[in-house]
Length: 377
Image (cartoon, rainbow, N blue to C red; front, side, top):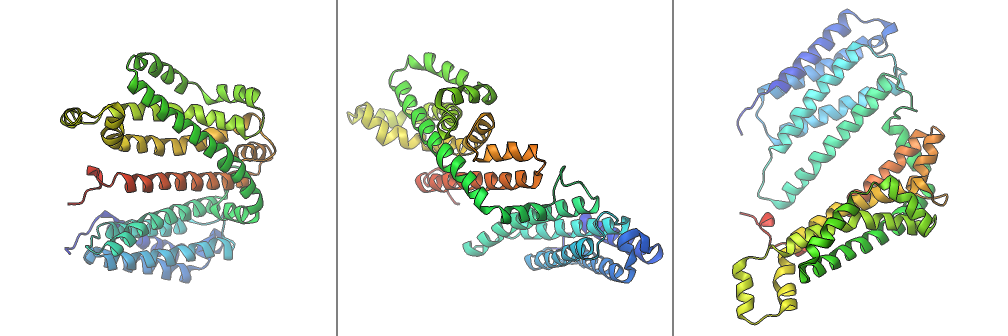
């Protein structure tokens, strides 16, 4: 591969060089990290060497991995300085220059990995998975360093370490909340909402004049605010999961309806004429031609609804629920200023929503493998 220097190499050199100079010339034991000038000077020198090497070297996956290793080592050292040596809240400009140098090296390393291309599917998949993992880990590291370095009050923004500790210590509570919100309200509302939206879409397709009557009403229902609908559903269906499932039904019905109606009209004119020439009736035409053509649109609605369902159930729990559930826990713990518990619930919701979306995406790939978006040259 060709040599491809960029501004991030020069930035790493500049930041680490400035940190090295400041640490050696202006160190002061009262300024936190500068109290260990030889130690941090060695780290800044290491970043400088890595930046120079990155500038002079070719862009290769091995180069990227080497830079990632340097960044991981520097990140570990930064956390040790903050927590092991008690420098949290009293770090100097030298520390932030060191972090900026790590940032430039991390960007350069991940960029090298992103440029990697291989005919080996397993190797390519491994690299494609490694890139978002490294990027997410770096964001968490920045979050931790910024919160600890500036001593941000935990009531405003707890560090990831505090959230992880609360998560590990509250598994029983989080499991019960997940079961109440996701396994009951989300799944029930999702199945009913998507199923009814699909059935009404087929009815609309079968009876064309309903497009002018039902679609505007469906649009009206989809525009209803959750905060206005949720209390009404609680009064109608009670405080348990049934009222939350009803809110999810309202949120997921219209996306499925619109996408299915649009997808059923996607079959080409030539294909429809061919089916008519074979004497196919409406239902044969629907199941053998039009529904397969509509599958990408249907799965698009399923993916959209997988995230809407989680949002709707959690918001609905703010307006009345048993003493369990993600929305209930978030609203009560905010009142108690236990923000780390709130973030732990957010993590559970994010993982559940992402996994649900991923399942829908895998099913889409399985049933629409013939679609142009999945064809490989």
